[in-house]
Image (cartoon, rainbow, N blue to C red; front, side, top):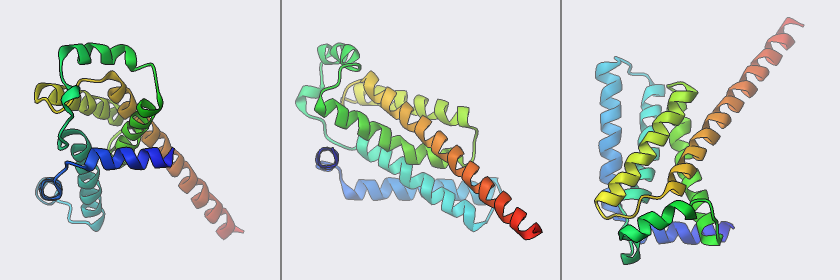
Length: 183
């Protein structure tokens, strides 16, 4: 499974320009950092870390979804229509792509959850996924696939659950440390 994920990742990145990826990352990072400096009036290291993490995760999403050159077979109305029923039938390649879609949105949703509610995080990720699929279809960068939206949304849900688990563990550790101090 790991070998398939690695091979599929290399396939996704084969036509992605590193320069375009760096430019996107720098642009997003600058926008988010400027937002924190001028709008939120926060100049904390934590805010800059958040801006960089958010920018990196969004750059990964853009790299994997909008910067690659699709195969000629990716186009056509028949392909779009056939993608709907195939969203629920998984062969080995579809499983790998589905798992990559889940993994792709985990870092983004995790960082997003840091600043906003769990429900809003999942809604924003699902909305972003639908927007990406529409852009892929309209700009002929791929096709509108329901399975991609489902995978991305599941990645967002997994990230929210992971974040809540992390908060729970931190809270338990703090309570244990406070109890030990009192003894």
